[in-house]
Image (cartoon, rainbow, N blue to C red; front, side, top):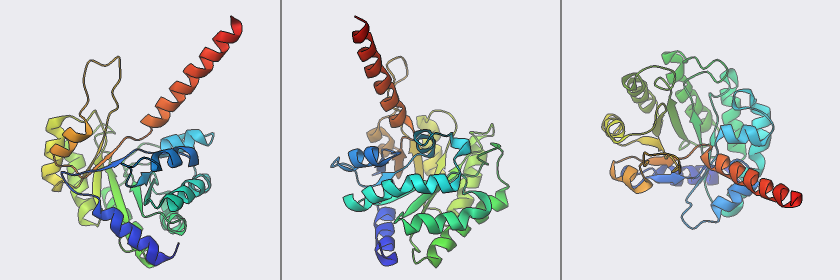
Length: 263
């Protein structure tokens, strides 16, 4: 894919982030999941979940190195190109000094955006605020140097996830948006209406929220995609939840087979 075509796809992908009419992403982890999700008429773009990509490639999220990650992304990117869907990838914490290398490598695959965390993948410690802001800029400069100035950065604000406050995540998130991020994804706790309203107000709707899939054993009904959209967010994703559901179904089906063979 030419850089012009990649930037055109990035521009189209960025335009899908509309507060109140959110882009919905059902995160994938390999070619089969990507092909299946891409075939759905409601699918407007593809996105990966690094946690699921890592498990599908025989490792753990904290141990998924850049080289292994890039190999895993090749088949997914090929599916995205074939389906004509923009692809954004979860690049974790950007792999430190290899951030620019990683951005260039995924753009070579036709990728139009990344998730970028502000906590260290290996230690779970928060990255220094100044360095975290600089990393958003570094990713965008690297993309622009590759001819993709409309590259989309979904900046993760992990303070709450790492034991801090929602207000701290909001403060950091505002800095990431000012540095050029398209949206901010605040992790930590199940998304509740009051928190999302606070994020929408703070970020002018430029919010990525995780959709919680319903659990039969849960007494709490999670917010639906429609309800999240009504709150004014711009992007919805599910992380590794679909992968987890597939593995559960696989285990149950195999268990049924083994049970029948014992009969």
